[in-house]
Length: 385
Image (cartoon, rainbow, N blue to C red):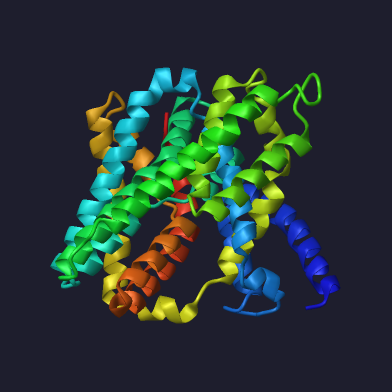
């Protein structure tokens, strides 16, 4: 691939992103959704004019973009936020994950889906899309208790989802008659625990050094260096870069002298990374996957929709938010992205006989929720008090 073509395409996408941002404000559609549709239009699903560097995606690039998002989400878990809303964040995140798993798994099983597949898809349904949700929040410009709580839930939601999914892998193996040796649980504990240790190991020195290497305030080079280091070491040790980035950000916001400045530095450069990330996601659309999902795929989508509403409502009733605010919170958590696909690939490795159904449904539904989900988040933000 000619470097000139890649650079020209990147320039066109950046400028096109500015135009879509303006368009989104006019038609009241999240720019995330518009960028996904742009990727589908220019990528293999329709015109297929994007260079392979964009249409095929990049694990390194995706890791960097999502680690930036996780780092910024960690900023929401400050002492003041946790003291004011920590109980709500914990209750809502756990309840929404639990309801998603139970309702999707049980509903699919009643539809005739094999129990191991139903359990695995239930675990996958718990995953969210931190990047899409975070961007819709930023685009809305809102800064209030509802937004603060939502950002905190998104920050911790995928951590619960990953742990629950790993447990369900073991249960699915027992249901399939494989037996289980605890290996999947050990792997889950390693990925989560290792990410927490890594995030803390990077975060504490960074919290002390920020503003000292360059007296007065942290520099952009300092902040971006943290993100690259966190992403690279997460890949090297095979732990969750989302969780590592979140822990790193959480440590810095609670222990650094300059609480906000490192995060402002990342916010300055975050959008170009996310812009290409969402275009790549749209370009990865597989039309044949959308056609192939059939009744089971439609059932999965409907059940996940219901689980988000029911889980949010139930969590609202268990806290002081009330059912209405809880339902809107569940609606705002509708987007689903790369974490779900990663779970599907892990599941397909453990259950190769179910690979086609699990991967196909996950890819097709993820694309659907990544396009429709931000619209739901935007609506919830408008209606929430």
